Image 1 (tube, one colour):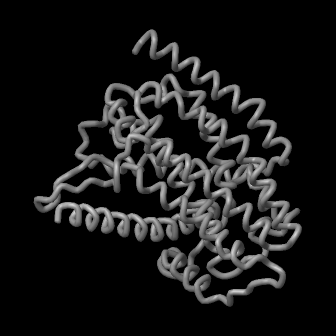
Image 2 (image 1 turned 120 degrees about the vertical axis):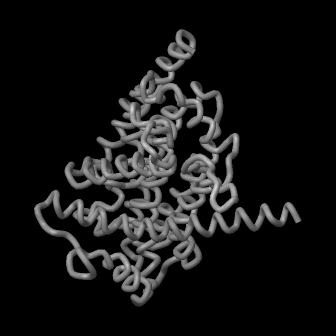
Length: 336
């Protein structure tokens, strides 16, 4: 019975997290469109609900009810599988991301995370790496040159930035002595790991932009060159899953992991710990601030060429990540 209770509890948590992520991702589209509108001196969504608040629901209904077309000559199995492989791994990372400390609610202990594993960070990296197969399969299965080029561009970019991303995360792991995301947060009770890991943080910022395909690293879509890149032949909800996974779910999840590694997770801001704010609220404030930074970059900078992006990964980001490991190693030896 105890095992059954644990299984039921985890299942309920997982369902709540998934539903919350879908709703959150839907309204992140509204936030981005409003934010981009103000950057470009236009109002953004305005007419569907108060200030366009119902626009994400209207968009979801539109995508779900559009005709689902499948071009001739595609590999149907991989064609359908690709959109799921792009979306599901990003959702699976939520299983190991802690959103705050446990708290009591009506006499029950609530833990705002599904599970705490001692290899949580490795598992998150593994799930994130799987999503690239969705893009590659979409390009291959579409039987069209534009999606194929887009998929290959994405693969070329990710090969470099996955390596740099992995090395950039070594510093916080060295300081915490654990791959558990919860233990990494707890190890930052005295100071945040951003202090000795500033180079690693810079590398991760660039890697997240590349991983999520946001400008200036969106060469896999490049509307002016590839129509829409790897998802050109997709329609309806199969099309909608790609930007939902990359631009919103993955960006949110990677922002959450960055906050955990470098900014103390749910630890309050320095000198503000006296405020009666729950830990989970502190966590989402930090994640939202980082997410808005990525939106700012997306709607400000022009697109780089694919050769410039790969050179940046191998010639600049990777050496910076290795230098960060050296600096953190000295920090651990000298300061502890």
